Amino acid sequence: MITKGTIVDLSSLSYETPNCCASCLGPRQTDVKAWTMERFGNVSRIRTMTFPYCDPCAKRARREKIRALVVELLAAAAGIGLAFVAWHAHVAIAAPLRFTVALLLAMAIGALLAWVTRPSVPAAPATARGEAVILKGTGGAVLCTNPRYAELLAKANLRTTKPGTHRLTPELVSPVLALLAGVFVLCLWFKASLATSTHPSPASTHAPAAAATKKH
Image (tube, rainbow, N blue to C red; front, top):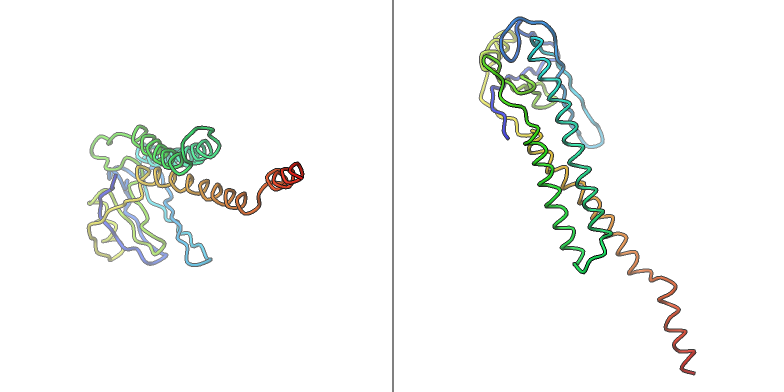
């Protein structure tokens, strides 16, 4: 599920925020931190920014953060668990087929978990199921779900606005995490299988020698 909104580029570390809720434009009652992380080579960079919310919208934003984390962890666990089942299952089905079925099933579970737990659209004038301001990167660009708030934010910081989208939602991330977790187990299986074929067990190496002894 893609989140559509308006992008404001707050490239400076110092920025001003309108004194109203970022989701519904109601009275400012609390603040919610938005954060993101990007990796540049061996260096990880984290950016945190704070935006105003009313209490009900802030509650939705915090609850959505928890939901996303839980769903993504469960999706990864499904990928690992089903891949291990495919690894150790004693059935007359080739391992590649077992892993294919396991990975597809894990992705389906991840997507289903995200969609079933997805919150409903809030009543107007609120505009966000979760966070109303989403960081697009560590450079400071943010996506606002409320176009009017985006205009106020841009005006307060002498910036311009442009349409934008946010694609890394739990509905997309969860099945991808399930797939990656399953592929990790698949790589372990492949490595173990390769090691077994390269170094046969002592029983298999001694069997031909025993047969030769009996022949003489």
